[in-house]
Image (cartoon, rainbow, N blue to C red; front, side, top):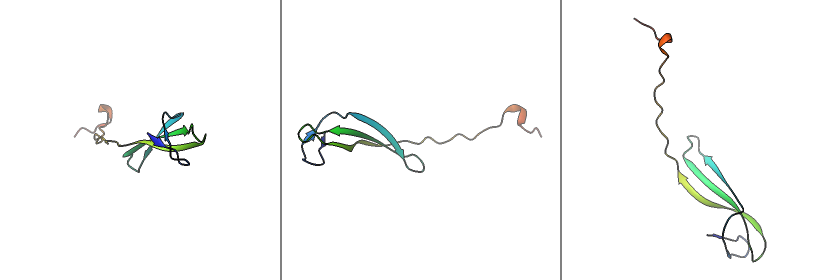
Length: 71
């Protein structure tokens, strides 16, 4: 449930949603939405959900067989 930024009434169901991933290492995922208040008829944007993203460790890159040096 999101509250209207003008009149403070509860607003249900966003018109549009989108997700943004923030941080240099992409650790935070935030979902925003556009809402319309039925009481005062005002459109506003608000945060719906925020979650931490688990970053997997990168595997060491190995060269293809034909590029490896045989000693």
